[in-house]
Length: 533
Image (spheres, rainbow, N blue to C red):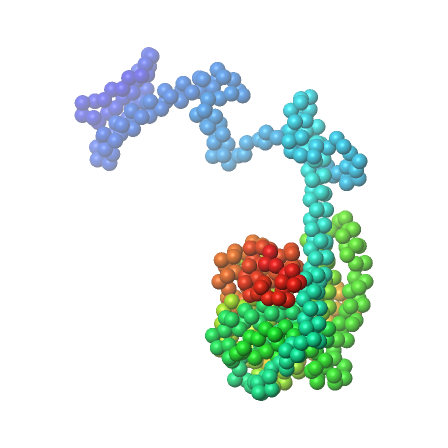
């Protein structure tokens, strides 16, 4: 190939190396294009033509199934540039075989199915297997592994259900030791609070907190973390409500472990006048609920025996059987206006929370006529925890729910709530709560399955004032992906879920936030072998 350029650089002619006269002739505009740039472009184009010619020749020699590196690139990119996809290299028989249904009974008693990927690869490398055999073996192995994974997950949920539903012997020991101390030690029977501090129990100039619990150790952590982090502990009044059996151990603990200057009141439900006057709706509902729940889906054995439902569905049904969902300590918050008729505002705390900051700013929140100050649970970085809407708790396939509520409306959290009792007394919230609990019992628990939050979502509907998520971080009891640094920086952390911090199944890295408020050198703690890990 020859290149001829006129002396004036106005014409450029390219001749082939063999025999043709004029191969390319370009007339260059005198003003619009740089002659030098055009000259370099033609040089590069000439070189490229020769290079492509050589590659094409090599590909032709190699055959249809082989190509040089650059040549292959052209073949691969060509269809994509033209909007076409290259044909799949996986034999169609593999797709057909993998799509065929495989009954679980077909795998029973089989010993020829590879148990691991290594066994599968070893068997395939022996040779003599076609694509269909490969697909059949792969399908059998994966199906077997899926079934075993499902059963292992269900067993894990069952064990967690048993662990979370039982009272650890260490906590049982603590209650017995404190009850004995209450009997034998006058210091364990002190009046709480002392007579001179009783007026503070109805004084609205104090910061009033309510804790309902039958767990002495858990109540101790909540109280200690609250008082230790409060800037003005002398203005704190903590009202601890417990049941009849836990009253004496609870009184003994707080009599012997003073949190002065904070004021601690310990009362059992039977000490409240309101509970002794006639019928108590929540107690009647609990009795009915317990009867229905005891027969619910045949108990844990029947739930686990289900071979068609997903593990997470089985886990939810197991959780519905937890005794805490029928505990009076869980339901009592709906009667706060009646229990504390002289108080205007209280902060209610669950016994599985830890306070990590001064909570006095909660009294400065303007509620704007709302009753319940709570953190919403449908927004936030943690999509697993902060993705809860009404459809997460209520059964919208039931017409009674679907015609009254919006499934995509944001839910909110129980566990750390600011309650304006003055505003509450002007509403019908408590009666609405009991009405829907009754409806759920009549429908065989088909409106919802879990505890007090669903009827709370209904009863407080339209009465919730959203507060900053800093005040209530959720999920430390049912997922371990929460960052320790993030949890440590929250105002209140909540171990909602099965993995309570006082249980062996607690997540170790998150449990530290709770154990820092337990004095493991205490004689009662040591004698009952309660340890940090």
